Length: 604
Image 1 (cartoon, one colour):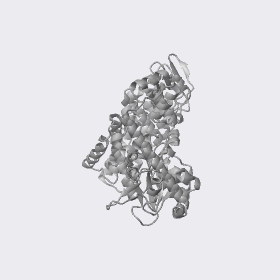
Image 2 (spheres, one colour; image 1 turned 180 degrees about the horizontal axis):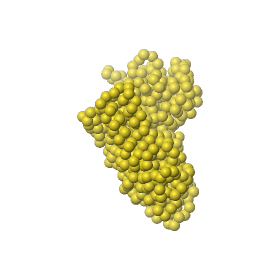
Image 3 (tube, helix red, strand yellow; image 1 turned 90 degrees about the horizontal axis):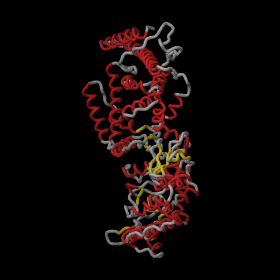
C-alpha cells in the first residue's frame, strides 16, 4: 500500500524514535544522542546510536541505519506496510484511504487469497480421505510426521477433472476467478478442468504464510514429475521461495539461510530441526530470489549436488549473482556428497552431516576462480593473459564499483600465485624485497631492549607480522607491498592479512583501536581475539613506532629466510630426481637469495 509523504512525516513526528528503539534496546544518554548495543549484530561494546533530533538510528559496527519505520521493520521482521500500520495504531492515526483503483486491486487480491486458501483446505481434506491414501502413504514413506504435514499444509489433488472446481463453485467462487488464481485451465475444445489431478500438493505461500500458488508431484510415471501454478496476480515463480514463511524468522535471527533444490528437501530439513531452508521453484536461481535470500541473511548458502549438473547449476548461480553483488552481500556454495540430496543425507547420516556440508561452503570468489581457471595451464605468458582476460571479464560484471575492485585484486592475486608454479617456484614463494634489520650475537634486535623475535616457526612469524601492523598501523605504508605479495601458510591469518590490506584501499587514517574496530566490523573478530590475546606484541616506549618497524623488518627477514630454506630443499629434491637446466637455474637463484638474506640478518 502506498502512503502519502505527509502522512509518513506526521507519523514520524508523533512517535519519539528513542521510545520506539528503547523497547528493544537498552539506551543510555550520551550528550545529544542515545547509545546502546546494536540489536542487529552481536557486539560487546556499544556502537549503536539514536539521534532524536535528526530522526535516525545508526550502527557504526554493522552499518544498520534508518528511521522509526525502518527500525520497526528490522526489529520485528515486518514489511513496510506492516510497520506503518503498527506505528499508526500506536500513534492513534487513521490510515489514509487508498485511491479507488488501488482499493479495487487490493479487494481482488484478497479474493484470490480467499479462493486459494479454500483450495488448500480442499486438498488437505482430500489427503485424509480414502481417495488420498496413496498420497499420504508417499509422504509417510518419506518420513514426514503428521505435525509436519499439517504445518506445511500438504494435500492431495483427486484424479477427477472437476472436483476442486465443483467444490469451490459451491462456495460461490466463479470459474473466471479460479482461472485467475491458476486453479483451473481450459482445453482446446473449451472445457475447463482442474489444474492439478492425481498429485500430492505443496502450497506455495507468501512471506505471511498465505497460499499464493501450488506445486504438485505425480506418484506415477506421468510428466512433468512436478507441476507448478502459472504466474498470477499473486504469484511470480521467479520471485518466490518455497518455505519462506517458515524460514523467515529463524533465518533472520541467525543471519543464515540455505537454499536447497526441492520441496521435500525444505520440509525434511525443517522437520529435522534445520528451519532456515528454502528452495527456488524448479528453475535456476533468479536475481529476485537472490535478493529475497539477502533479505534474510547477508551470505546465503546455496546447496548443490556434487554431480556435473550440480556444478553447472552452481556456475550459473555464481554468474547471475555477480551484477547484483553489494558490500557485505555475497553467496556461499555447499557441495553435497555424490548421490545425496539434503533429504537423503539427513535421513542416512543425521543433521550433523548436513551442517558439516553447509559449514564447509565455498565463497563466491572460489567458484568464479574455479569456473574459469580449473584445468587451464598458465605456463606461458599467452595462457596467463588469456586466463586473466576471462577473470577480469567476470569481475567486470559486478555492478558495485567497490566490490568489483576487490574482486579484480583478489583474482589477480590468485592468478599470480598459480602462475609462479610453472616457472619452478614450488614453494610458497614469499615476497621480493630485502629486509633492513640486523641482529646481534644473542639473537636480539639492536635497540629493542629485552624484546626477542619469535622462534623459527612460520606461523609465529606470521602472527608477529600481523600483530605489529595492527598495533601500529603507521607501519603499513612501508610494508604493504611486501605484505601484499606474501601468502601466509595459515589460512585464517592469510584472510586477516587481506583484511588489513583493505584498510589501505579505504583511504582511512586509522589508529590501532580504530583499525581493530574496522576489522571487527569486517568479520574478523574471532581472528583478532585469537591473535591479540597476549601482550607479547606490546612495545611501550616513546619511540614505539620506530622500534616496531625495526622488529617487523627483522621478523620478516626470518620469515623470508625460513621459506627460502624450504624452497631450496624442494628445488634440490627436484634437481636430484630429474635434472634439467631450469632446475639448475632455479637452485642457483635460491641459493643466491639465501646468501643475500644471510648477509642482511647476520647469518645462520
